[in-house]
Length: 279
Ligand SMILES: [Zn+2]
Image (cartoon, rainbow, N blue to C red; front, side, top):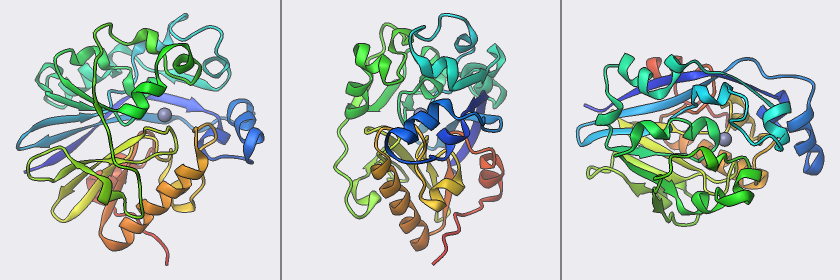
C-alpha cells in the first residue's frame, strides 16, 4: 500500500508580501523583499512516498548550514533582508528520515520540485540516488545568473548531476502533460510553472484521492484558492494559471493539496482533507 510521510526540516520566515503578492510589477518585487511585515513561522516540508516499487522523496528541505555566516552569497540582498531560518542539525532530512523509520541511503529516487535553497538543502544525504529535476529549472540555476536568481549553487555537492526531465508544455489540463514515475502510473511528475519556470509537482493516487505534492506552487492553500501569486516568483501570470488548473482538477476529483510551507499540511494529510473549490 502506498503511504505518504511528511517530514519537517525546520522553519523559515519570509516577508508577508512574499507569501501573498502585494501590488504588481516592480512594486510586487519591492514589497516581496522589503515589506515591513513578516510571515508567521512557516515549516519547511519534504515528503517521502512509500510505494511498492520503492521510496521516492520529494524535496530535501534545508540544511542547518544555512544558519551559518557566509553560506549564502554576501552580496545578495534577499538572504539578508527577506529571509530567516531556524534549522538545527537534527532538523535536516537525514535525521528526520531516521525519525520516521527510514535511512537516507535507502532512498533510490529524489524528485526536486525546484532548486531553491530550502528544497535542495539536503542534497548531500542522497549521493547515490537518482535525482530528477526539470531541464528548465537546472538551466536557470546555473552559474552567477543562477546565484543571482536565488539558487546557492556553490553549495551543491560537487558531483550533483541530476537526470533532467523535459516535460511537455502546459495546456488546459495539467495531468495531460504529466510523466509517470512508477510503472503502475500512481506517482506522476507534473509541470507546475510560475514560482520558477521549471517548477514541478508530484501527484500520488491513493484510494481514488490525488495527493498533490506541490512544492512552492503556492505558499498557502488559501493563496492557491484565491489565485494570488507569491511576491518573488519569476512568472506570476504562469503561477496564477497553474493555480487555476489545480482548482480545475480539484473540481473533478478529490485532491489533497500538500506543499512546502503551509502549516496545515500535516493535518490535511492525516485527515485527507480535500481542496474545497467554490463554484
Ligand atoms: Zn521556492
